Image (cartoon, rainbow, N blue to C red; front, side, top):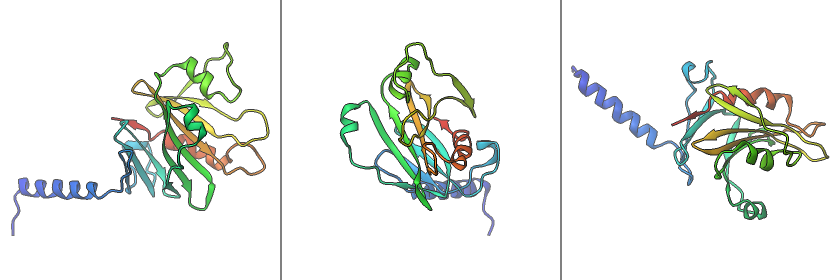
Length: 197
């Protein structure tokens, strides 16, 4: 049987849409795709990674399949104090749930002064302004560990359509109050895959 080129293209399009519609989704308009990113998407071929797509806010990124999505915890007192911040995603490492990645959005207008006040580990410093660093196609603002005896996440913030999107990398914490070297090496690889649409 001979299949015409238009029929073949239509059949491939229908199959692609059907496969895409079967991708797992959640209530935040997010989709998880299970194919490795292509070289042009991340600058290198990273096998065994999955794609997170958030249609509500228009962004996506890739993460290794050693991490898995977890249910977001119910709202707590922190959510009541900061109603402008919304949790979007929690990823945990399969072999160590102490290693995780939170994604959240600050719905206030993107502003470096607000960022230094709200997200700085050391509190408000009127003379300090966060410095942005290019990673991939975007500029990220980094906040590392502060003082004290608690565990700190490595926080990266990026402007997303006039709002502030946060990537919070945590653990595992081994004899330190900051994420492990392994996590720190993974951070720029994930951030490099961040895209908006």
